[in-house]
Length: 314
Image (cartoon, rainbow, N blue to C red):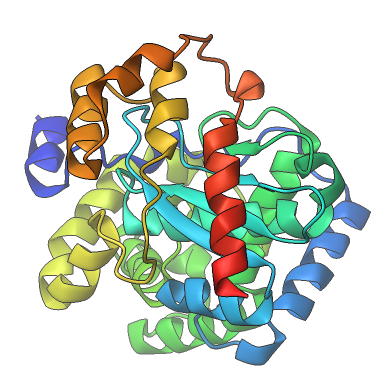
């Protein structure tokens, strides 16, 4: 009954249980390295929320970084980052516009870490972001960086103290579950961080001891969040919706690669080909490939298009 109730309130496909934030725990040194990098890269914001401003902020801060949105049918594909030309210091973060804006923001911060730390490898292979399939330590660091970048420890400390004062509590551990849910909800809206990621931030910074207790009550916390959203309907709707008004110019050429790897349907691909006014024979050049993320290959036509765009932007 609970699940049915939640499904009527939330957009199709909305589930933050898929965020893999606990595999491959980081060492103390690795955590400090990630914290310092996140603090350095968000210095212009101090402790203020970045949220939806992440796209313009990174585009202005990193002149070699550009963004694209494209709908992919694969629910596990959140984003990927590619270098279209290994001779030019420019990369594209391509976001799955079928994911919620909350997801797109977190995936952007995740891929930003790879842009900063893995650029040499990215020049040979695109880096895929699947927040439900974190395979190695680099992705775990990228997830922690995204959480720290969007909600740093200093901001979390101030916000928790403020919210506890409003609730008349001196510790989160003394808060009732409904009160705890209200704190999590406020942080989710204010910092545009996925609900589950907020839970882990509170755990990582020592505000709660047993993360499993709160994960077990995740459905209830999400229910409180959704019911409370009536007071912040506009913000909540935007973050849970898929529209991203902060990025322009979708790359329809990505449909070729997306179809080859099973990310989009043939009907969707044909529709985009019609929108572009391309000859239907364009379909005949496709070669179906395996659906493994690690084997994603970016078509030469896409790389050429991105190179042309770079020349135009210069």
